[in-house]
Length: 538
Image 1 (spheres, rainbow, N blue to C red):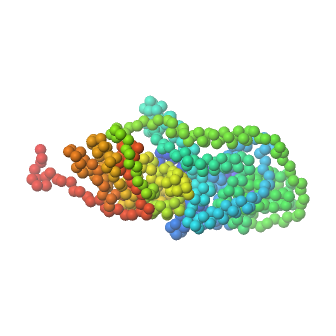
Image 2 (cartoon, rainbow, N blue to C red):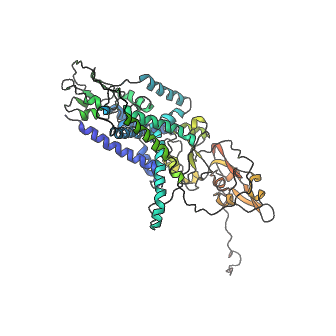
């Protein structure tokens, strides 16, 4: 029986997952409906597990499906569902185009058992201690998301902004529209750059070494796959010792010295069964009868340096690192109306005690515990108020999104971040509840306000406040100045974003450590000029 169809099926399924997940992360125009996110991401292991722990609901059952698949067929999650694993296969495939035939071959390698299980135990211990910072750094899904958001998205936005003026001259306005891409703090690139370099290097040199030495999900599923029902089986009765299976095994887990397969490292890529011309490698439930065979180890010349491989790795990383600044260096036409500026720089700093976490995140502790910093909500946010943090949540919360009101504000009628979050760090809210979720409170610094310092009209904060928690009251002569009603403020940051003073804002939002419920704004009934007289006023 031939099993070559298994590899073809695996490639097709993996490409479907890769394209679908990439589309969600790279949809900078926010065209993908929110209802599509959950079906596409439901089988991602870590997000599904964290969501289940958080909400204790079987609706977050994706990780259970993955475990069942692993018990049945081994690490098919790693080969067909995990986007970072699929990305490694793509990198390996491209790198082979730059290698000689001998250099394309893999071989049996040591398992790095102590390293991978140490990392897995460390992740579990840190999680039990109430922190997710190790998961944040090592989760394959989140690392894949950050690679796309930090490196690939800027390229797409940059190309979009280059083509938009051309389309405008051709009087075509519906295809390309200028997009403003907010700059990501340089310090936030530390982890993505490190992971990207490690993944590319390991993929080019050793195939799936990252999955079998660093990734805690791969280690955990690898342990389960030891007891899988269907496994790769080697038949010594038909094997000709051509070593094709060993040379194509990207996990380096086939040892033809003993005719054994290290199932903890096998990612079920089916390269071995596809490459074997004699059906000596199969995928089935029952073990084959094996007779003892002694073979000499195949030697591979590694004495020469593969300069083409080094050039490929360096070129790939340099291209992706350079892409981060591409879109930011292309100007986007500013269509906003001019606003007044302070004549002299403001001197009183904003006294923010807590950062602001998104509505639906319950509070800072709950948010930082369940967020893996995949950056999906950052891409989905229509106002760009969600930005990667550096030290706003502390060093362990690096890259987790926070509400940056200098970049944008939380749209009063938007709840998109809660709809797309796969981990439950941001829970979905109905619109009525979202409009009352108080994620912070506004504070007004009169000595920074240009109404006082420059004796000029402004009122930008009041104009943009959706609940009218910020309203204008008489000040001096005909001037009016802001006043804040904290009880109806929801902390959306529209006032802070609109405030024109620099470098410190005259009005700002301090986050609530635990989110509260704001009071409903009082509805003011408009006066009807016909109410008393019944006559038209003209």
